[in-house]
Image (tube, rainbow, N blue to C red; front, side, top):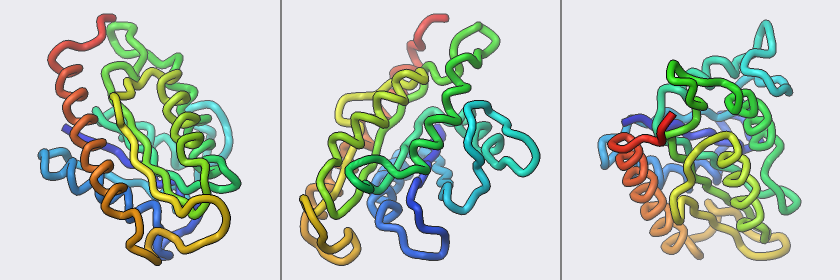
Length: 198
């Protein structure tokens, strides 16, 4: 089984990404279940705006799209900015919009029988809103969203330390992340055994 993580931090490598640190909890748990995980830090790639799979020369999205089609599990990981998903998370959903009309050999939408979840970090409130926006978009595209397929960490409203600056709240976020991974894996196995009909 394979999984793809889209890290939608606005920071480019090699800057430390708090979003990546929490997403890694989910990755580690999936790896324990023999899932092969590939992570893309979207800020390190040229992904122009658009709603097609290939926006022309220099577009690096087609390679990521191919990875999505080769994976049973998707994790979208994003920071919270002004109470919303990052602009890169929104861009990923816009580029994935093309998958709504893409079908496989059985005329089934390509995202069907794949599961998805969400990881959110930030030092401000709004995590549930961000989870709802991303999970709703992924459901529109065709992904199955298992129960409790998310985890988040934040310091509440207003400014404060980032995830990497404090241990506060880590135990809850990490336990929730491990449960998220288990739920994604379980539902992906169930869909592999009994897929949604064409």
